[in-house]
Length: 357
Ligand code: GLY
Image (cartoon, rainbow, N blue to C red; front, side):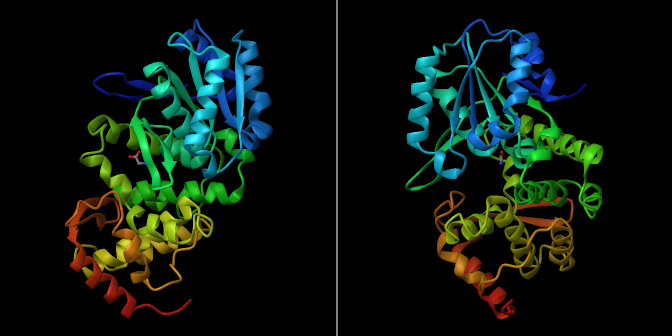
């Protein structure tokens, strides 16, 4: 079995690459929960993969209760959180029990935050079933709910006790969701590893996909071990996110899914970096080619400066300006603090080069 350690100073944990059928045995062997086991999933994931997890837990002799949430970002709210607290109370979850998040980023973030705060913290396990969750959100302990004031505004760093990952669960994933995950995979190549970037010219499948997911988990585990609280190196994972979040917000979270917005945001960041003289001019085109090869749009259809009002509200805005993540080249990124006036000037120059698509 392939194992990736997330080597934190305290509460380190493993990512285990195995098949769903083995997950019950692995949970029993690794965590031996004495108290109640509470599984949180969404209706879509459970319809596609629930039988497999249920059989695995039954086979290992682990009794459990399941709470199914409606799929989608609208579940990641204080109402969704309240629903999980009610479920934990009913299921009798205590600190000797276990919470299992079985799904994509929404289920993982919400369940992780519920586990972080229920009885001041109960152990939880991430079983990510989307590519985006497998390569990013299930690893690193970022948990949150959205508030009316903004995405992920209430949350906690709370690490899982274990991540169980089966790439075969991606077989039932909608193609659009798979593409969104590929945007994050391409991001790892762009910021850390030019060879990984080049391997993505052909969309990976089967064993190649498992290798790629494992490589992304290794990169994520390393950066989380170095900067668990996101004050330094981990910020590079935000490449494409400042522009991307703005596109996502302006589109009302419907025009673009998160990964699609990150794809557009990466190209915009590469174009901004070129105008600022820190990114080689060919990087934006190289990103565009790889994104298109993986079925992702790479050209933001509106004038880039339309993103500015939303970018000003970004969490990474420290009052005087923003911290953009820019490329030194494909495979190397850095944080570039930029004053608002300078950012406005760059976006206006990007507007000048903009042609309607
Ligand atoms: N998704 C970015 C991070 O975990 O830091």
